[in-house]
Image (cartoon, rainbow, N blue to C red):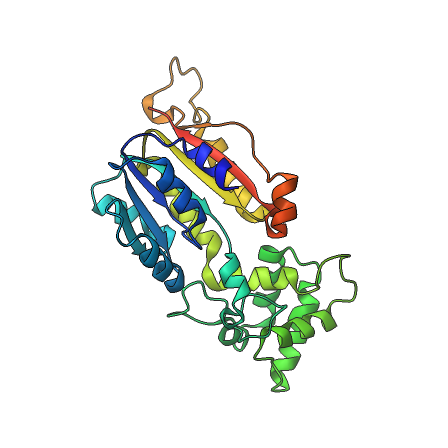
Amino acid sequence: MIQEAIDGLCPRPGGVWVDGTYGRGGHAAALLSALDDTACVWLVDQDPQAIQLARSRHGGDHRCRILQARFSDLGDVLRGEGLAGHVMGILLDLGVSSPQLDDPSRGFSFLREGPLDMRMDNSRGETARQWLDRVDEKTLARVLREYGEERFARRIARFVGAAREADALPDTTTGLAALIAEAVPRAEPGRHPATRSFQAIRIHINDELGALDALLEDICDLLGPGGRLVVISFHSLEDRRVKRFINRHSQVGDLPAGAGRVPPEKQPKLRRVGRACRPTDSEVRANPRARSAILRVAERLP
């Protein structure tokens, strides 16, 4: 939904703009094409390979600031640059990117054999294999249930625990996928049995929901009047957070009984722009991975 995202940002001359999830750079390239020569565009990603791509493509563009960081750190970074309250647009394309899925060495896909890594920033932190080697069954079941909405979470956790006790815990993505498939008694039609578990483990390893919550708390302080937030989510856990955030800040805050007027601190900070947007049928045919995407837009009020 590149064009829908750019339309949601509503590019104007000049200003500071942030692509918080550079990925393979499609949204960034479209945004840069829509902006004039006086704009400043921050291209941010925690994935070293995405940052390397951004530097090769846009390192010579004087408008671009390229930063390897989690988007949860954007608030501190932009405040440190004196940009809080001056950002005209922030774009987030959440979840794993196609290059990450397509590279077996990153360990995100259960369809391609690779190491059980799953880190967005594979230069630091604990891999999925390392976590599975130490996590207790109760915690694993909770992660699978909460982040993957996996109905067989406890059974999968028992199978993983048994494999670990037998010194047979898989080292590869396809090995883990096969173990999960063995644990799931009834697979969903048209869905691999490991789909929900891989999503849950990836979300946990990268603290994706925690990072999203952290940035959302900073959004109203970062955006200037009329500034736009555009978020593309790919599953209900992300979208629910974004929807609730926009709804909460688009309404008058709780007032004491008998309050005669709405004080400034209770005034709405955002307005919802349009309805939630989904990809067109033609885009889904061209890119089946887009089928679950939901785009939401909000604008900072004065």
